[in-house]
Image (cartoon, rainbow over all chains, first blue to last red; front, side, top):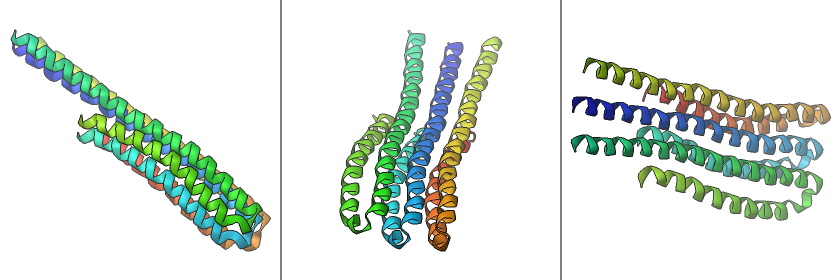
Amino acid sequence: MFSAILTVLLQVTAGASLAKMGAAIGAAIAAVGAGYGIGRIGSSAMEAIARQPEASGDIRSNMIVSAALIEGVCFFAVITCALVLFV
Amino acid sequence: MFSAILTVLLQVTAGASLAKMGAAIGAAIAAVGAGYGIGRIGSSAMEAIARQPEASGDIRSNMIVSAALIEGVCFFAVITCALVLFV
Amino acid sequence: MFSAILTVLLQVTAGASLAKMGAAIGAAIAAVGAGYGIGRIGSSAMEAIARQPEASGDIRSNMIVSAALIEGVCFFAVITCALVLFV
């Protein structure tokens, strides 16, 4: 009887640590997605300004709009991963 | 009998933590999809504005429409993953 | 009875170390994402300044904005991974 309770406790802890591992790796993969997407947009924006410096205002506002869309999804994904630790 | 109930409880908990791991990794992969897709659209929009600065209004509105379509699907996927934690 | 307690302790430690492994690997993957993204932006900024030196002010401010967006997501992901160690 006592041993059974101990076994339950043990399994619960092992399961919780699996969820934590998933949360950490998930947050990392979401960060890679943001890095790839925003990196590509930023890199093209630099080249676009070098080619057409007088359009830099337009380029900057479009860069911020599209980067913010990626930022929104990725931040929400990282927050979902952080939520796994507390729920 | 008591031991059987404990075993059931233990299995339930172990299963729940596996589901949480899946939720975190799923949200991350959805974020990578959004980063890849919106990053590609934004990068082409920057180059397009540099090539034809007087068409920047048209390019911006089209960029926002197509990026919002990706955003919608990816956001819904991340919300589904967050829902796994509470259901 | 004593052996059961020892088994529980051992399993708890094994589970906790699995979570720590995930935290370490997650922090590393997030750092790779930041390195890729900010590296790409910085590299394009160098080439853009070399091509159009009189636009270097514009290029610098845009570079800082887009790199800061990547930095925000990746930093939060690394903090989530560090949080795994304490929760």
